[in-house]
Length: 104
Image (cartoon, rainbow, N blue to C red; front, side, top):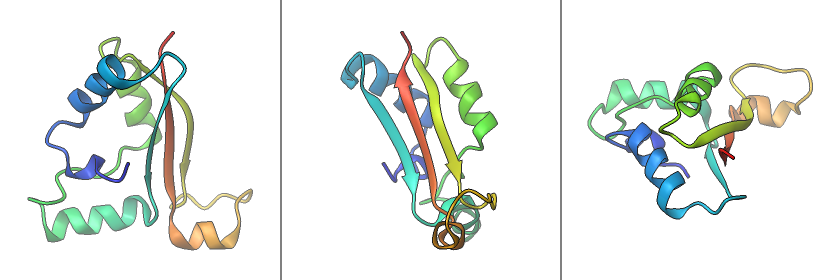
């Protein structure tokens, strides 16, 4: 979902998703087509609407590593980190995507 940067408390929201809505083998996909750099600029421009930047891989892993979250980080891609194994189109766009799974 594209709303993570707009949420008052992303940690509590992810925890509630995990506990109340996510099936045992379900996943949560956090994505944004423009990436962290874009959201960072939007946070500076409108901090009321954009409350948080998208988390780094380490921040997301830490959030998921918290037993209360009930989630684990399965996959992470930040197009702002230019990687050789992705196409130029994706690097240009800054695609951000994280896949979280329910902790077993």
